[in-house]
Image 1 (tube, protein in one colour):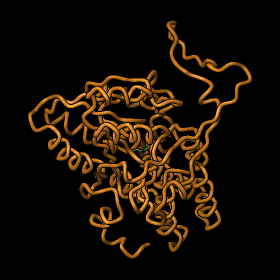
Image 2 (image 1 turned 120 degrees about the vertical axis):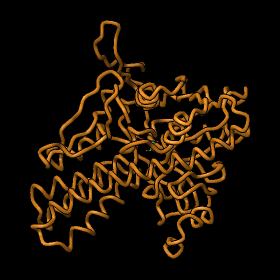
Image 3 (image 1 turned 60 degrees about the horizontal axis):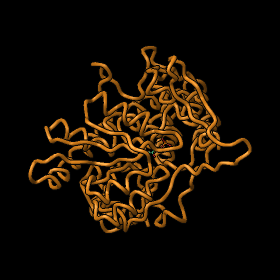
Image 4 (image 1 turned 90 degrees about the horizontal axis):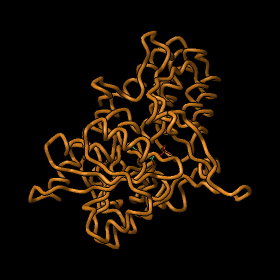
Length: 364
Ligand code: MRU
């Protein structure tokens, strides 16, 4: 996607052929800074501190983390260590495990002298594949959006968190259909949930929609139900960090409440996802998906730009009040209208997913 006329992905290999570069998402929307990741430790820190974030991008960054580890030391011990350290960086998005297992399976049988090159090649492939998958999610979502807009009127979408190109390598999951619709001339406006506590909606989704020229309005997280009751939301569309075999989706905290409100108001609730986000090993998302607990400071503090142009962090709680910060929640499949994948659109159910991924029928 473009930033001020220049094409960017969220992560790429630097000109020296070793250093990995990524957009620092902790500084957006106020500053656009590209960070160098020079070691596996840098990649781990970038994932943990959310310099890079969003399930598909976490997977891509982990793949490059393994490549950086192999550049430093291609031994079996270091491969195992990189897998272990990177896997522990964030617990919920399953793309992380998918990418790490993929790299380990590729590299372990190779002679050590070949591991560095193979790891960088595979990490680049994962990035290219993610961009292409997300483009296809956009095309499949566009067909669905066209069905919702038979008379050419303006459509109002609502999204939560950031599941746009910043959360992937390019295009995004939930936002890819929106970009495709906008580019196809469909008049579309997006209600953007601010997404406390880290404000991925207000800081990232609003920023990237603005860069692409997509009309949008940022709303407080609690406004969505009201807007739905008043007929101001035609459909909701979100991403997912882990989707179970039966179609439960785990996404940024607050997604479940939007799905409940959508269900109560007859508003279609879509989830866009690439195949590495499906965890075929589990069915019950509520029981089996590990929910990340992040630092209470993300709830008790806010960061933003002051009138004088400085970036400042302020406390919003009374001194001594504790805060809790569960980062994700699970929306049960029954509240999801459809899943939009790179292979097509399906019901949020085991039968629906298997209709698109029949090769997984045996993996129960
Ligand atoms: O904590 P984050 O910012 O990594 O959470 C990201 C989300 O919840 C996204 O909606 C999800 O990864 C789907 S993205 C394409």
